[in-house]
Amino acid sequence: MEWLKALLTKHNVGEEVVTSILEATKDSQYVPKSRLDDEISKKKDLETEIVNRDKQIKDLSKLSNDNEALTKKLADLETSNSDWKSKYDVLQLDTAIKLSITDAHNLETVLKLLPREGLELQEGKVKGLDDVLTKMKTDHAYLFKAEDTNNPNLSGFKPNNPPGKNNGSNTNPWAKESFNLTEQGRIMNENPDLANQLMAQAK
Image 1 (cartoon, rainbow, N blue to C red):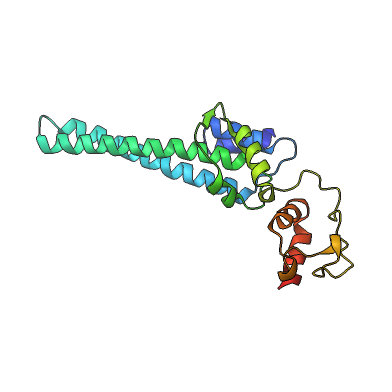
Image 2: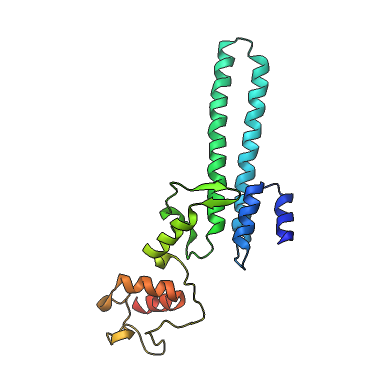
């Protein structure tokens, strides 16, 4: 992954983000380039804004000279700059979280449900994230891809038989007469393709 590290360093995205991205991409985990580009762009925009505000503060400091209006303006800018730096810290954490979650069916849905209390970015890793994700995968397993992808067909379903009929294990949990949220979640987790087929057939 040296090529990726060199590319990220060239774009000056920050050591912690570089480490986070490299962690997320090891063991054949794939982070879409579009997601990476988006996070780099957001980070650069915030960095530019912070630099501009720092420059404004320095310029006003030279002109203040006990002038009450300028002194107040300077104080307002310092407060505003502090807010922008807080946003930057939040962005750093959010970026690391996004790049660490590689097995979600829909990343935005997972991020909305993900509790951030206690999560902290340390040396490119999000402290506490593993525990939070473990609990989420237990409580909301349907939001994540199944770990075992070797079996293309869901046990208990025979795709060659028309689903939707109430015939034991071949029932369609999306059909009106056999609607079952628990079974829907299980199928979405274990076999998303089959879930899409069953949903289409139940319409």
